[in-house]
Image (cartoon, rainbow, N blue to C red):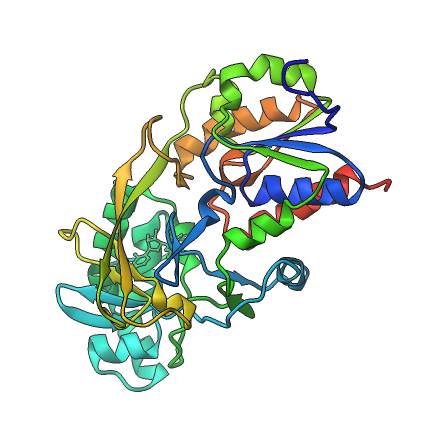
Length: 377
Ligand code: UDP
């Protein structure tokens, strides 16, 4: 045995939330897991590190938000949350607007002061744009929800640089992630439970994986020795890219990537908000995070800001966002069918399922897989 040296019950590929929850739950049931992780750290894109007393989210802002009480209770056993509520500001060529789209935004855009006035303005713009019937793409969906002015200033530029394609070529569901509200409420999410862990996200994983029945190996590439791994382990949980698993045999699924550039300043407060989105087409980054504003208890005198730049994805870059358009969805179906035939392998997570999951959805999916796997004990 080259890899399964301890009679492991599971090989788990990827130490992100899906794989880590699975290993934790398996250990609770007396099952032994080996987790192999390509990167040098656990936690996947939820990974955070502490610098100048500030928790920096290395792979972009992660705010846990959910309506699922079971998931919320589950994650709270590993950490305390700080009650942070995300309130994003948009900067469009120097004009500032509140997000998500709500009465504050409508007032700032048009000077309207009541929900009726805002609704009339949106209806007028939707009609002028000739939109009726079910929206066929992100542009039509956006205009039909909040009108042309907001679409032009707060959505089009941001969306097209974020996704590297025209808003008319993107699925409508992406913009429905953002709430539209006819009340003065800047909460970016509609969910009942929300926050950021007081000790950062990495501490959650350290706790989750702290078991004699779990071994973690970082900097290990499953694909480099896939056949041996599959031969040696009775069961595998795979959270990497589903097309990579099958050696891209039906073709390559597309992803969007991002890169981050951080800077530290001698200040307690540089930009005045945790997240500012730059919604024009020309600014090369989409948003700037000031991490101390997520934490509410950082040391004084230093602040760290990170700019997020969207970029094309290729196999040398991290795959952040699946591109769930028609072409890729059709291709994914082929892989999914193939995955269904592998009875000793469970495919999970954002990359294994090629879904634009939020953290709570990954938690929910992992707990479901656990329930199915251990239904008898
Ligand atoms: N979006 C936008 N303007 C913004 C923020 C978001 O047009 O200022 C659109 C954009 O298409 C983005 C989508 O809304 O991809 C979803 O935004 P969200 O903040 O949920 O994206 P994530 O945080 O997952 O990157």
